[in-house]
Length: 75
Image (cartoon, rainbow, N blue to C red; front, side, top):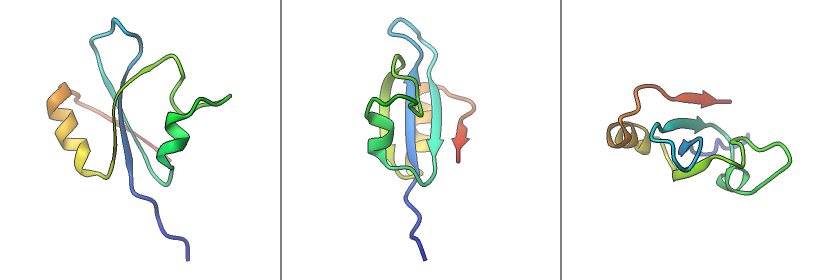
């Protein structure tokens, strides 16, 4: 039986000058798959990653810190 990987939480902006931040939560995906540049990345390479964390404890903390109302869950 395969063991589930912990959730990876990412807070990002769509450009350097953007003030609005977005949050994505990835299930069963390694952190390295998000951080490395690929041909078809999970988060586009031109986006600016502000925070990357492993575990679901970061979701509520970063929602409050960056004033994010919704987050999307991938896979």
